[in-house]
Length: 281
Image (cartoon, rainbow, N blue to C red):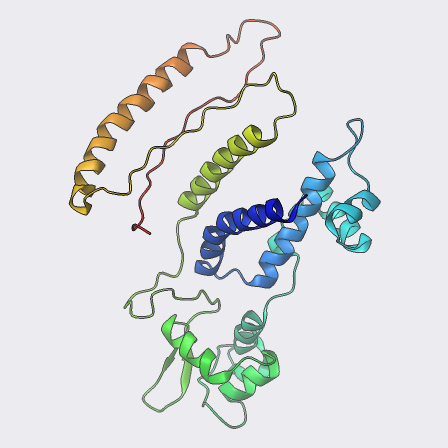
C-alpha cells in the first residue's frame, strides 16, 4: 500500500471513529475500555474473516495481522467463544476506583455503610481518597469535573458529599440538569443504522466478485441552502421521505417468503434514509 492511500485510509477511519468517540465520552467510556473493546474486535474480525478453507483464523496468523500478542489473542478468543460481555471483563478505571472506595472503603463510610462527607484536605479527606485510589489525577481538576457532572456537592460546611457512584462527563458544563441515565433504545437504533450503512459501503469497496452488483448508496446535498429553509426542508422530507419508505415497505411485504414453500430462503432487505446538516465549511 502506498503512503498516499494509507493516509487517505487513516483519515477516513478517523472520520468514522470521531462520532463514536463522542458517544463513548458522553456515556463515560474511558480510553482504556475503548482500547480493550477495539482489541477484542480486531481479534473477532481477524478470526472470522481471514480463515482458510472456511476455518477460523489461527492465533499465529491473527498475531501477524493485528500486532496483538498471542497471549491476549488466546484470552480474547476464549472470551468470544464463551460469549462473555466485554464490559464486565476489565478492571475499573481510576475515577471508578475513587467512587467505589468512597462508597465501600472503611475509611470513607459510616457505621451503617453510607459514604461520609469529606473535607478537601487532611486525614480521611477528598485529597487523600484521590491520592490513594486515583494515581496521578489532578485533585482540583477532578473536583471541578465532579461538581459540573453532579457527582458531588459542596456543603455549607465546606465538606464534599458524593451523590453518585458512577461518573459520566458533562459535555455541557453550563447546563443546570444532567440526566443520570439515557434510554438505551435510541443508542441501539443508532448503532444498527451505522452498521447497515457501513456494511453497504464496505461491500461496494471490497466485493470479491466483479459479477456482484454494487448496492445502492446515494446522497444529495447542497452547500448554498438558506438556513431559514431548514424547517421547510424538515416538512418536505417528513412527507416525501415517509411516503417513499411506505412504498418500499409495501414492496418488501409483497415479496415475503412463502412459509408453506419448502426450501425457501429468506434474506434481510431494506432501504434507509437519513438527514444531513452541518455548517458550511
